[in-house]
Length: 568
Ligand SMILES: [Zn+2]
Image 1: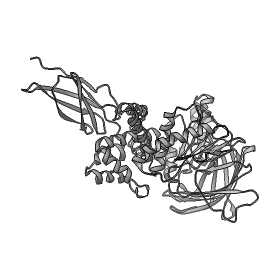
Image 2: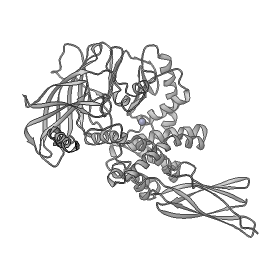
Image 3: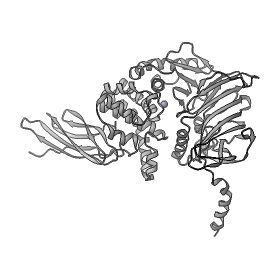
Image 4: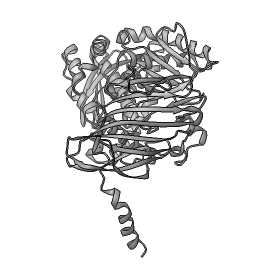
């Protein structure tokens, strides 16, 4: 049997690095000097990083990872070189599908909560590379529209973790063959680095405009003066991914609610987007008040590129062929981010998607809004099914709305949560809640629940428990029985009993179709329980339909019930 000797050999080979806890340290502070040579596709970085041991054990070794197209040049501690070995580490958190990993042996072990400061140097190229997508079967073109990060002479745009590890990170390997493992790994990284900061001084050998997803900072004297540097600061990462772009950007002069940096030849497309943003800004202002920050658009040079957002900044292709309505929907999302930032993804993204649905509703009615929401509903169902199949409480706990890094949940499921909340408490109270929300006061997960309680005097703890604080899956409503009874005056009283077979409760809309029309109502049905409602109607009842699509549900095949009238 070959297997018996294979295992020990693998054990010896991996034993060296198997002992390292890659996620023991948090990277609390980055201070980087980044030199970019677009014509060579080159990136060279020197800098200082501060790491804190957040594990319960003392650590003598640590891992530093950068994109596999970059290479380590130096690692020093207290001015002295430290011992490190480099290796390729397969992981899909980077577009190349691999990382250059340095396993560093520290001069002394770092105790739990202790910190260590390292000076690092690395360099290499950042070419267009979609290996991680093509190797799981994506088409070349499609893959490049998704992984568009590149340093190149005409155009440079590079996103951070999850796309290009252009600054050192450390995570356990993640593979796109299990898609959620990539999101969970990046989610864990973002959680650990939530309060971390970054300072970057860029030096670019080409006179194009540089954009970075941080605040412009004053220069310090020790920065090299040979060619001009631009310094930026990110005081706190939150969920944002540090991103830079370098291009021959031009800017619209008076562009109203959004600043648009466009590439030569795209002025008309830029104007169209700015116009759409102006139209959307009234709607967003009515719900959320004035913007906290001016929204920014940066054009991507690949017309098929998938847009990417960092708070209220949007990297996107621009085209005069884009439908005006679509531009408005995009602008509603972006301007909601500008008006209502939040450190919590389910709030920030949930509200922006909710605003899009509400905008559809204002233009075309509730059915159109629910149609828009149904585009997200499918993804929510699929992800919840996968989590339920995993059958471990850990996966469920990691994927409560407050913790999850899975987009279908913090976008799609959160959209439904905000929509259900508004349906439950009404427009006036909902408007006060979202207007009162302040990112800097959002210190604990129950903050939104308290805002709701203040405005409505309703305790919706059960709702937040089922949908936000925990992942209890989705409801599954079943019309259990319908009993029509004719009154002496010839009208009907219809008693409808609905059972919820699922793990999450909801207040669900209910429609009673009657001869010549319909009567609608709402019914709160908690998880694993049933509730009844009595509806009076002068016409003959025909059919009961539970859920108009505004509550995400695992199974909608059991939601209608034909009313059988007792024979007279
Ligand atoms: Zn967004």
